[in-house]
Image (cartoon, rainbow, N blue to C red; front, top):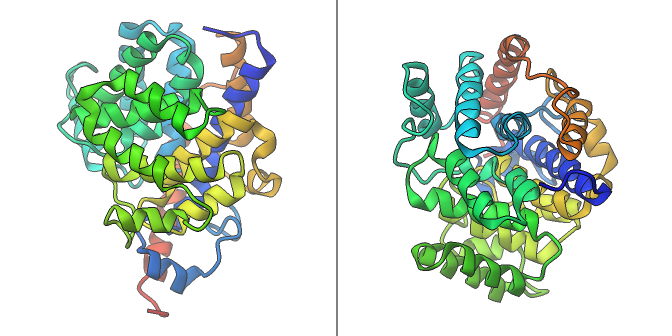
Length: 349
């Protein structure tokens, strides 16, 4: 693990803050179709979750848990699995809102005593992809170790091989954030091989689709998900990667483009933000988007401190995960989510 390079620190902090920013920008529109999103909210200019402030969902929370587990276990795969499993147990008991079905079932199994390597259910949902970018930033130079850790992180909740291939594609993108689309595809082809042929075909289509006259909505239409990007790994990952190929380090343009597609917008935003942030560091993230993230106990300051601890491999510094505080915060968060749900029942239609 590299932990002394300033560039590595920039990538780690950029990845963590990019996840949080993409998550918080996309969160208010989660579950809306592309057409309904435009009808209710119009243009996407910044945060609109709570009085022009943004809050964080499970996408950022899972990334933080993975990052802490990597720090506390030095990337030892068995210890990492056990550590992350315990973090997920405590996280689940803090009553998070909007938890995915596969993650819900897996967390129940964990709380009933299943070990982390046996708790996953057969699903190809987005959960593993939303938390895998930081693994790529930390261990991308060692492809076998990266694969081991991505597999461990994935199988705690999702056991469909498609979930692992999608999570690996995200981890590799975060590591190869300066590569061209063609270079990235060649590396991914070597990494996942014939077993991931279905995903490779979709990503190759994304590579070939990139052109000045086509946006991410056009690519989503070509996949048959024009109404909104679903929570299925093979819908989300190719579309996010297309948006990354098209915009690279233009954080504002890429996030706006992906959120306009509708659907699972907090997760697509979080994954894209993680990859783009890893490529350009904190400085590519619009300052007002960062400063308007209003959350606790996870915050921009907390995530930066965690990023520095990871880059230095320093277990003695950095904020702790405050699950007790999260319980109180989650009550408030759930109320805001319910208010958004009520707003969606009102015109314009």
